[in-house]
Length: 353
Image (cartoon, rainbow, N blue to C red; front, side, top):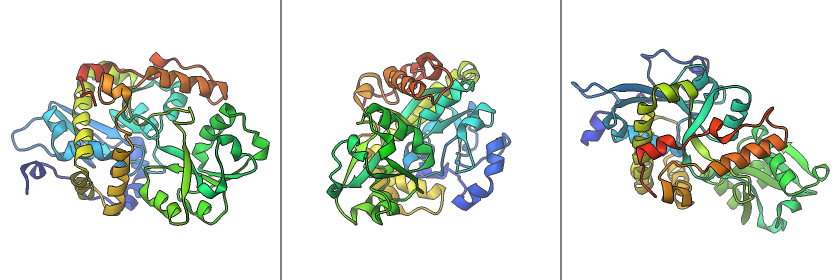
């Protein structure tokens, strides 16, 4: 056993256990409780305890922070970090805003804009994914060439994806009266069985995409490529914690960057660490998903090459808030300064990648 493994003590918690405990998590666990977090070696005194609420069950798409825990990067930065997995009954924004955890992570940043517009004092401070993997997927034989070709088709979406579809409809002047929308679950079966002509999903989800590809060649429109740009796996905090615990957050950003970049370069090891922390996951599926993240370049961009890992382009946020306001999805305009800051990334001097 390697030395870095000796200092990591985590319970193996199943997804069923998380759903069963969703109510307790939503209210915020007591400060002494821990789900995923390192136990410091004898004699070591971490300078700060921190907890993070993520938006879904722990899986390969959070490999960076999993590796950061397993390799001791957070501990080296003086942070005793606990990751609290989420689930369908847990809203990370409400948990963080209510003081249940120090900060959180969301899979899509539109929810942060909406929360800020509704009066919750939350702000993004860095992002793991430089573009969102959400896409409209269809069989190549359908001869869909542009979003305008959605007219006359049946689109299968998850209910939470309705605002994204509305943004595409507006941007590409699609006649929504000629569009049939069907709410579907999280798998791609409706497309395979012909219930829908187009389905929404995450391109990095290996299991979903492989299920479709077994039925025929596929094409897709990535939301980012359509000009509706969102970040994914984005870290956020309340205004108060940003003011009062800035030093801890800077150290977190630095350690998290180390974890994500190590996971990028060592995918097999990253998945091994993940499987030690949770149960119910298929190793090959999780590995293929993580490899899609790396191969697709989701962790880096022109922005990160210039400014460092985790840096966010303010224009992406401005365009998003403008679009949401124009569609009537938020009650008031939200300025870039209200909803995001790159100050912590700049201070942490994360690697240009």
